[in-house]
Every structure is written in structure tokens, then in C-alpha cells.
Amino acid sequence: MTSILLVDSDRARASAASGFLAAAGYSVTVAHTGRDAAAVCRRSPSAVDLIMMDMELGAGMDGIETARAILNEFDLPIVFTYTASDCARFAKAAALLTYGYVPKDASIDVYSASIASALKLHKICSERQRSEIARLETERLHRDLIEKMPDGVYKSTHEGKFIEVNPAMVRILGYASKEELYAIDIKTQLYFAAADRESAALEEKLEEMAVFRLKKKDGSEVWVEDHGSHVVDDDGTVLYHEGILRDVTERVRSERQLLQAQKLEGIGTLAGGIAHDFNNLLAMILGSAELLSKQTAAAPNLKKYVDRIIDASERGASISRQLLLFSRPNQAELKPVSLSHLILELDDLLKHFLPKSITIETKTDADSGIIMGDSGQIHQALLNLAINASDAMSGRGTMVIRECIADAAAMREKYPAQRLQPYIGVSISDTGVGMEPSVLGKIFDPFFST
Image (cartoon, rainbow, N blue to C red):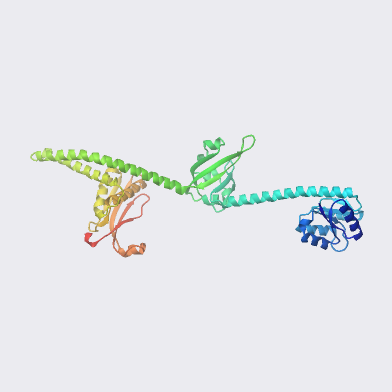
């Protein structure tokens, strides 16, 4: 049963209207003032399906003002009842969301038709309002999700301008604000080469996932994984690009380091095999040369050539030993080690393998002492630093390998966690980008000091 709140200041008219509405099957509650009508709604708003409001309503608030106050609190359909003298109030009523007008002297059929029409219209409007509220809430949640995502989200034109970005996109590319990012030209300011932006997938309007580098605002590079696609119209024309951009700089660096480590491991295995075969050949050459040396002792002209063979074979044996050290497994074998001796061996090895345009200088202190360490691991660490230094010089320059005693107090000041005792320092510097000195070991016991 439909519940009607009938609001009319004329008690007799209200009683009559209530009677024929009740007779027509409606549940009717009567209020004679705006205050009473508002009180009924507040007391039980769910018990009111529709309000029949007297437009004039007598003293105090008129029907228009009462309707406005009720609609500020409740979503209820209101149908105004009026007489010819209420015509001046229609302009004010038009500003409100109302659902119809019924003459006060209309028949019950007109009342019933107006009530049915108002209830149906209110249901449609309420559903639309709920849908709009739901849509706005969905948009808000979606917007919040995009704004809080750690990955960059973007829309951009095919010509190279951003339409929309989230805060993560601004942060990844190193800009200060969205507005600053909107102002840039993507082709010329985000790519190290404008042609890098043009890819087959981009031109063919396909979805793509690609890993590539971009240029940040400060000119540094950032590696990104782009899950992008194109939005096109019915004619196939690209409207804009959209996608998610993830910063994978650390992942790319880790993959490169892993690849480099795998290469070094492969080189180590290969070097070990070569060194063993090389040793066998050198043993035969050196043994034969020593026999020849004894037989040519009385022939100086021949002996000097034999001595050259022996010297060359011994240098080859030295290189072979370095290759075997490089290829050793990483199990630490702590023994007394002379860094000065290792540096001199490294110098000999590097002079054979590095370009002749790189000059190698060694500065060692023969009285610096002995450390406890694994000679293979230390040799490999020094070799890696030396290779990095040679790469930094692009094949030309001077590399300096220096050994020195590090002052105990200075070491404690720089590294508070270290014990107060002497350290041996080794640095490898170059005329390229340069490298920081690396402390490789500490004096283990005065017994091993020279």
C-alpha cells in the first residue's frame, strides 16, 4: 500500500482529501504545517512514499519553503496541490525537483494518476542517481588506484605529448610535477635518439611490451618496462597511446652483472683448460731447452739462443700460473700471502694481455708485511679491478697499481667497526674515470711481517 503524507493547512479540505484517498486504497498521514510535515518525515522517513503538498500552506512556511527543507534532508517525491490563487508560486516551485501539480478540487482519478506518475518518475530518477553515484565512486576508486600505483601510468598523443600521467610517472622520469611533464616533447626530451620511439609495434598499432631506456630530466638514463597499447577510432586512426611504465633499472643492472659473472666463470673454466695444456707443452719445451743448454755450453753463439728459449718458456709458465689462479674455485684457502709478489705477477700478466698503448706502473713496498688470505681470490679481485680500469681508459692511458701500509688510526676513523691494527692498502687508479682505493687485507700476525 502506498503511504501518502498529505500536507494542507485547511483542516476541512485535508479531512475530505484524506477520506477519498483512503477510500482509493492509499495509507494517509495528515500534517497541517510545514513543521509538522518535517517532523513526520524525520520520525519515520521510510513510512512515507509520497508527499501531497499544499502550495500555499497558510501561516509560517509556505508549501514551497517546506518542500525545500524536506528535500534537503530526504529523497521523497513531492506533488503540489494548488488553486488558481497560487499561480504566483509556480515560478518558485519550478526551481525544486518536484514530480507534478494537481488542482485541489481534482477528482480521485486525477489524484491517482498523478501519484502513480510521480512514483514511477521518482523511481527512474533514483535509479539514475544511484547509478551516477556508483559511477562517480568507481571513478574515484580508479583514480585513487592510479594515483597511488608505484608504476607509471600514462596517456600520450602519437605526436609526442603527454595527456595524462600519474605521480609515479613523474617520479620515474625525474620531473617536479605533472605540468612540467605535460610541457615536454616525448620524442626529443625522453629519448636519447628521436628515432628510438618509432618501433614496428608502434607503427602497426599493436599492443607491445618492451624494455628500453629513457632519458630523465637530469640527463641520466632509466630502464623501463613498457606495457603499452593504442586507442583508435572506427577508421583506425590513433587517438592516443596508453600504458604502464615500470622502472626496471636495478633489474637490468643485476641481469648485466649476472651475465658478466657467467662470462667470467666461462672464461675461468676455459683458462684452466688452456693453462693445463699449455703447461704440458711448456714442460716439453723447457726440458728440451735445458738439455740443449748443457750441450751448447761450449758454443756461446748457440747458447744465447737456447737461453732465450728458456726465458720465453719461463715467462709462458708464469702466465700459465696466473691463468690457473684465475680459474680456481672460490673456496677460500687462507695462507700467508705477499701482496707485493701478487702485484708483480699481475703486472707481468697484464703486460701480455692489455694493449701496448696502456702503460702499467707498479709501486710496491717490499717491507709492507704478509697477510693471511687466499692468493687466488685476491689475484682475481685485483685482475677485475685492473680490467675495469683498462675499460675506463678506452685502450689508452696509464694504470697505477699501488701498495701501501694504511695507518691504523686513520682506518679506525674511516671504518669505526674495524679493529685498531695496521692494514695493507692496494689501489688501482687510471687516467680514465678513476677508481677508489680498495683495502684488501690486514696484517694477521707480527710473525709474518717483514
